[in-house]
Length: 222
Image 1 (cartoon, rainbow, N blue to C red):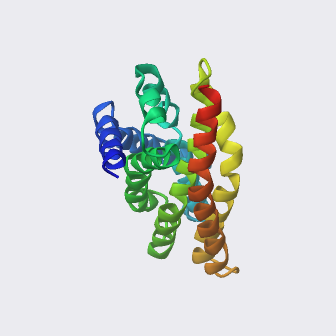
Image 2: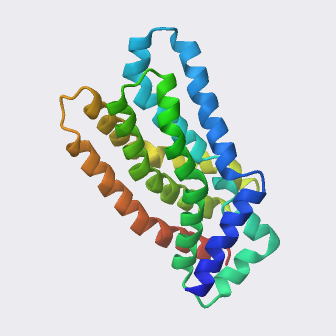
């Protein structure tokens, strides 16, 4: 546990030191939310209807920014070999790195979402629903991205492949995240129905993601 907590603290410090995963993600999130209304026009009712989808797409794209460096930096400086040979199970080490990524990338997006929701003319209930679904759904985005980052770590210019590998797998999370937000806003489906599916997707991703990523690392670096 000491090794895992040290790895968690190290990744958080590196994310804050090297350009800041939190600041970069929030700035990209802000750019996406600010640019979409220019394309849709000044229709406030339209922005309110599409606001949850805009916030979810922006959060999804922002969460991909730091994924290519999740294992690549450790692979370049040899730290990944030490992690593979360490006493701690590789699955737990990978889970610790995923937690660090979510704390430095996912949580700031959840915090920024209510403020950006005001720019899209969202009602307070809709803002709360979007923030809640992002809080539940962003761990799934991180764990799914973990698999893509592990598959690409041993490939030359593998960082370019991460979005291609990850985006199709995140479609169910995006669908039910937006559906839950819209259900809280207008119905007719109860909020609990898509939200429960979103929770199930997150739990499945948290369980499967570290094991799949660890297997990909072992196979790719043999």
